[in-house]
Image (cartoon, rainbow, N blue to C red; front, side, top):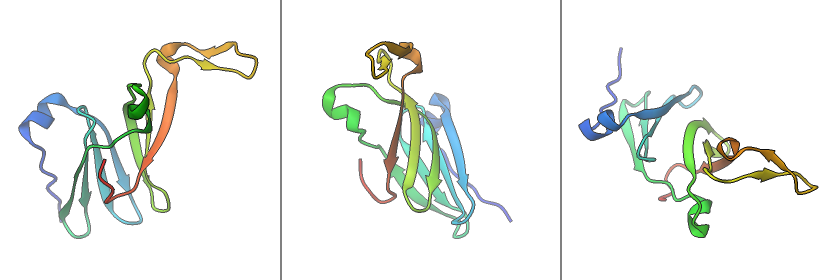
Length: 114
């Protein structure tokens, strides 16, 4: 048995940032360099669709760059990414991490349009 997970030529050229396989529901997820997310149901051998998530940081003009994803059956898709130029600070106001290390975790429920 096999599964074909088609990828448009433009997406293949731009690249895949991250792949994730959720074992209990047999779903394959691809995070594309464009920021779009593709999903496949492996058991049913069908596409779940394509999404362009809207990140909470978009509303305040901050560029969130997703770098990894995984699916949690209870919480949806979880993303880990960078916020270029952002500095994390501690309770005393001193910087804790350089700009390239600032991270954000965001989530998206399957079926929600972004």
